[in-house]
Length: 489
Image 1 (tube, rainbow, N blue to C red):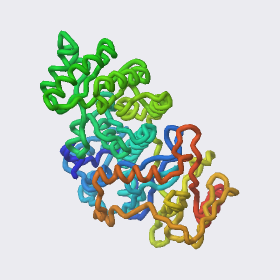
Image 2 (cartoon, rainbow, N blue to C red):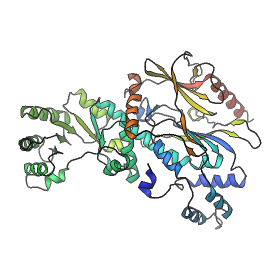
Image 3 (cartoon, rainbow, N blue to C red):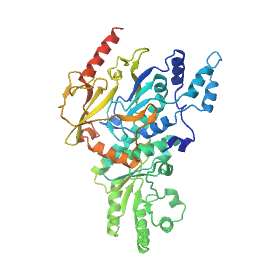
Image 4 (cartoon, helix red, strand yellow):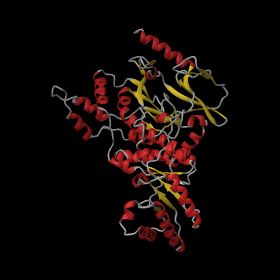
């Protein structure tokens, strides 16, 4: 799939912050362009005060990297940029270097749909310092947003308890890009379909939708509107009943449903979009059942989120399908995931040994982990039980996991415990080696991943903290490096 070319008709090589290019220029001037480095993309806190996150966006990342090439228009634009002295920001020879650039990094990533946790590398980039630096902004842009929406979707689908959830958010999404990416991520998170037709075309997501209040108001009578729609689309009838008076609207929908039935068709459902959804859904269910429409579904919308869904289910409302818009596609109540991209190792000139790097901070949560990092997930009775971050250059001899913020908290996992290493090869020397699953397969995988967590992890209020920590030797390496840096060595 050529996502970016389908949408934009061009590569997105300049989808980057200027400082990536100014640093690249500095590397070029310092003759550090070929120096090998490792970067890791990770986040520091689960969103929505939740207990897990869903990794998403890898297919976009793959497509972006496959098309990573400075074209003539990119270079012509960069040549126009000026410094504060009015002279060109970049030398012509540097732009010629960019023109010859061919992406050559190794990329390892956690597959889309995987549940992930703070400080775990979602993507690991190994290769030329310049190339690894250049792609930082785009990777963060893609993974931060799509992981956020996929997580919100998974939470709402969990709240729905297996009932159908539909994504109706395009009109409230953050622009065209946000609308498309959100529809894709929401589907991976578990929604059944989207109203976004372009997303349906590009990604192969099922699309659903019937009519709005404007359809009703364009007729003199509500029943006339229902009958006209039933005549036009007898195989797609979900009637929106709250334009004027909800319960009278249900009565008229039933009349239209009877006409449909006489013609051999079926009223699929009614939709409630305002008012007391618990009360109206229960009244509507009784009316539909009494009229012989026991298989007609009740669809609700109106600024729903996981907390409202939970509340409506606790009130024993008769709701079959949940249509969610604004609060899903905008990740309502948390606008960003906050993922970061840090250098964790570098090879100095003339030295084939890795020199580990880490960001130091007065805030413990902002101290990064050094090394060529991998994540190992352990399983017991088909449940995910703990994750260990370790250094691939120093394979663990035992499974002792240390809490990076409290080294007195340690977890020992038996050596024979089943496990899976989460980061898998995506690119090798710039060549794609990963076979992407279909979006439907990713969605099914995501459902299984969420189901593999103990219910205490996935609950909405005060979720239990899933055990994630550093392998014992890596924790010691990190501690020694912190002390060394604190001493200024």
